[in-house]
Image (tube, rainbow, N blue to C red; front, side):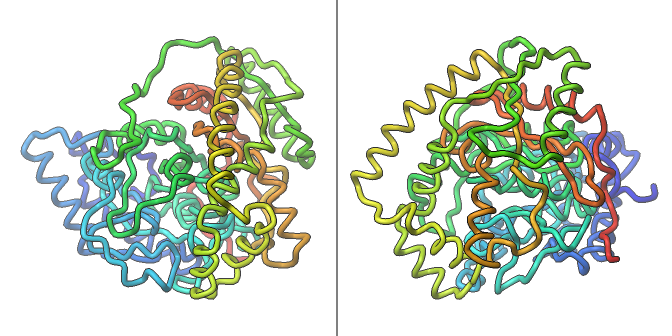
Length: 467
């Protein structure tokens, strides 16, 4: 079969299970696509063809024995380079960690393998996974395949660029402040930030995380179809005893009314006209699919949530993070920490107590809002995708980037799930929308996402734009 790499993961898994396509054929196709386009975009920074083919052979052998190999039977997927994968360096975009070789897989890698996935390669991220741009001193710059002048996103920028360019059918990403949702937005694909506790996490090769990342950072999938996000979620969310935060929540919750709150301008974000138009268009798509959409002008606290999220993420052990960034010498990481110092430092036990105490109130406020409106539709970002490296240009540009990302930064503070749905292009530049639901209600996001997706999405996978 020609161009297997183009197929949706759902379709490919079905073909492999029915023996119409072998896992080896899918792996060979994926490796060929990687070789063809990765040099132009630098999305995958480590891959071993022999390992890929060996994984595929295991899947084919299991199918030959009549075994159920899982929902991702033989599907090539990529893994972000900040997650443990046995035998590979967990660099997190750092020279400091290029020799940090994992002895064991993280839970999400194990779960993907148990579901039959073939790990194709490891994708790039910025140093410390701090930014919405993807460049570092150990792996270099990742380029957006739709337009190299705009950011590929971050911190899962390699993941977004890879899946948009057809390198793997699904990409793994992580998200603490938009790191799945933003790369999906700027690369013209879909990305699901899962609920805290939905996907088990643990990196044995690295020190235990501080409390902020423990309660806000999550793994989730990026893909070219909502259906592929659904099966990815099923695979990723299997139990693992290594994560004390993992929750055995069902993938399908009780029925809820098809009711959506549309907030075009949350807390004075003042999105650009193209973003507003995408939201109105998405609302119309939902209405055509039988959803009731009600425009709202106010939400539970969003700016306060974003401010507290930034403090928990960057303020806790700020001096230690800054010292590490200075040793690394990465300008983007230093810009992130120095640009936020006045917001997050000093950070002491009283600050931590106040933030965590206030978090309970905000979680409650948002839970009540999402009880009334099962799905919220709002911007991913206040702007179209940024010019690449904008945050390091000057102080005003740095402030502009952080202000525009308000919706992405805020949602993780409450541990809520969020979904980016890509809806179209403005010239070559993608645009999309952001859906939010209550905790462990990814099913509602995917249901609404499918309704929006049905109205049209940017073509993908695509050949990298080289003009």
